[in-house]
Length: 192
Image (cartoon, rainbow, N blue to C red; front, side):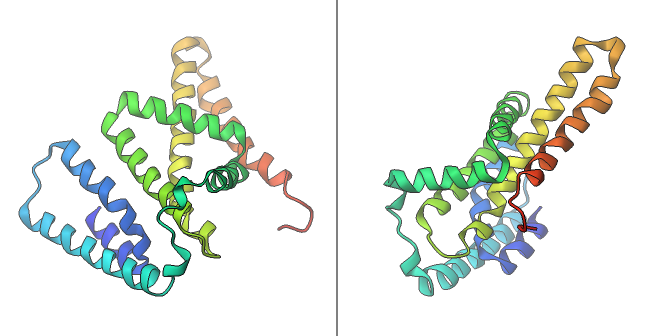
């Protein structure tokens, strides 16, 4: 995890927003963490914070307004962006996935919520032209939640209809496949 985080942060300092979730995950796992690991993590996060200061505060500081999260139109616009990516059904699916993840694996649910919240905050305070691209980790976390919701549905079908386990094996992945296909079919002509 540390190697991937380090490579990611050195390539894109915005991934430093994942650092609080990683630290919380280490703490919640209660796994013994060597001191060198924590020192290396602190170094990587320090480099990421420096990169954030150089890339976003120094060069694009005019595009960051730390009080913009208070503006309702920013929330509506960011919510519209998220809904436009997946649709309302997928948004509800991701809420179910988060709820089940937080119930069955509380540390993982908390960690993904913290990471999602960090990117939501960034999306609310940053107004640059490449904002949608920079919010890709937010969308990836939402996809993880949606996938977990479909896994939960499959498990429920297996337990509810043990004689028809093909429902969980074939119908659930097919239903999950229909989601991006339906979004693809709803694109305006010439958008691809």
